[in-house]
Image 1 (cartoon, rainbow, N blue to C red):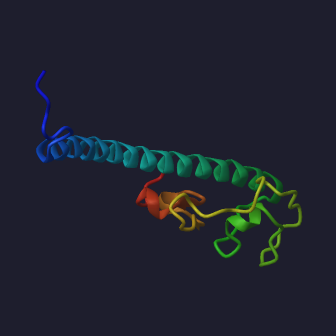
Image 2: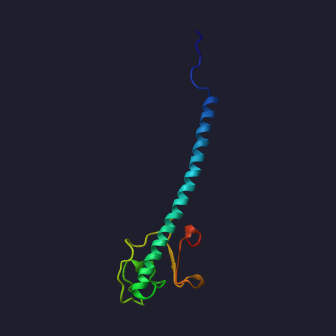
Image 3: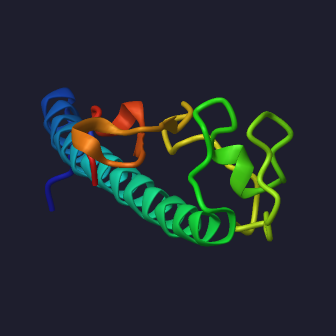
Length: 130
């Protein structure tokens, strides 16, 4: 029986193994980062849809949409800036407006573009409407 004088992995075998592990890790990281970005975009679209539904409820009760100065905060607490709605029956959302999934703020404009009554966007969506 022949004995190995140097049992174990050679430097070349170790380097090849490390290269394979690093390549697989990089591939998984790339795919994972794309999935995270996709999840953020989906979360932002859903939150904007929730705010749009709440704005419709606000409009039904108050007869108008909040002003830009009142903002989305008017869906959580009764506005104190003029024009103060008499028939505010909120809150219209379950929690105070939170930052978007990228950490920025949702941008509420009233009136919105192209004759729309309002617009809600965020920086992470690149200004596109959901």
